[in-house]
Image (cartoon, helix red, strand yellow):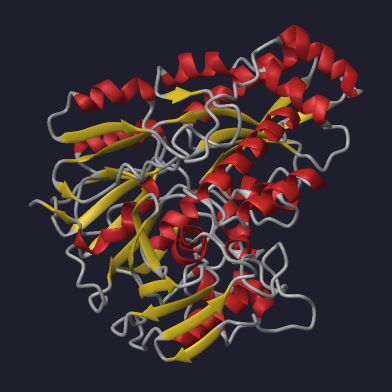
Length: 542
């Protein structure tokens, strides 16, 4: 993975002299200050976590997905939960919830001038289903006929049956069984980025991840075009003036990567006009009141679908259910919420948060009980003389602070835990391979409650490496239901089982903090995932 090695090496860069475009800048990694005149054509966004990839097929982390949406469009936009609007597709319809017809926008084109066609859609979906392709999107298409439960084609089969390019702008596809239309629109329509066939078909499928098309994309479909990425410092985009939905009002966007304290300083100084939010641009809680008192800024907190988790590697036999329960009950999660989040986070019993349509409000979080935790640890048979490494991604200050509290709580029941701080792309790479013992991580969860990609073997986001046949059966059955009320009942039972087994420890569900300049028209929405749906219409007052 040449890209991972490239991104792993942290560098300090002077950010400003080469960008005679806008605002007084500080390097995202602490370089020298450079001063230029404010410019209403250029938007500067602050983000704490660096993107892992610029690959439309492989974006498992929130930061990478956010970065890619500036330049790649999906078939549909989703400005609000389960409210879909046209993007590359003008329509995505079905009469029987199993056979779907997608009509593409005939004006959509790639940045090299070639049209976006049905062949691009069919090619992208077949590429995701190709077992040779490393992708985080296979779980998003697993409902299609002919694919296994990991969203891949069986050996010897090269095309998804029932997936047809009827004409240049029409695609038809078929699911294994009837599915909730919102389910397929969410996962396939909104979460899958369409790749240009004429670019990617020239690359060996197994080598796409390290190709220039995936690391330095030049042919894309979104409102902005990729210019450059300086590792751990900034991403530069320029407007796609031939964008099919209209010429963007902004000419350039810089996403600057910096820690939470610098996010606040730069926002107040006007050097950035927006904090990315969504778990990748975190305003420290202690600074919210400072920002709210600034008349030039708009600040609000909103509930989210996301949470922060302690993943225990389930593939390690010693980390059995009793051990995992011991870990959860040993951690004083309420203390973390009270001390670090000051009322802007809440405890939840499982991965489902209170704004999820299937959240079981009757299920309670496991209580903090170090005495019980000690007993469970003894019953688990774990050798407490062994040291456990807890890997903590840098960038999210509160998550880093919570690691010390967690370490202390686990020590109190007899576990020897040491922290190792790593950059997020490195942590994510280790998580995908299962090359870790414990990690702290946040999940970018969807409106649809099918989180099987996090819990089913082969799932693209199964960082905890869970392989529980009962849970797999329950999740696959719930995903295939078409009636929303029946799905809610099924997911209620799933939440009970998750709570019992503690496949991962749900630490807390933080509110998202939306902070941006009042000069900005557009920006982060209360439904964070839908924030970039109207990016081409964003503008800045002079």
